[in-house]
Length: 86
Image (tube, rainbow, N blue to C red; front, side):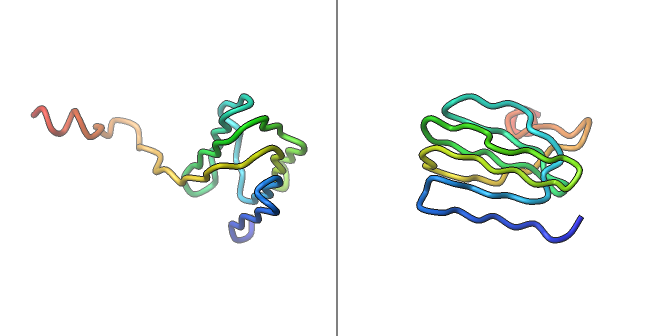
């Protein structure tokens, strides 16, 4: 795959590349795994208009309120609270 890119048009259409898979989605949240990490898209009336895992491209439409990148934990890696409670 090529470089990762995100394009948001009028807060209504989001095009993203580098998609590995869509983990979950509903009208308020889409969770996606990227080749390098993950992202969460939040909003209202969200729909996946197009998903092409071969090319790693997705188009999500609706009212987009936020986009957040998250780090994917490696298997066996402890979370924040587990490290805090040592």
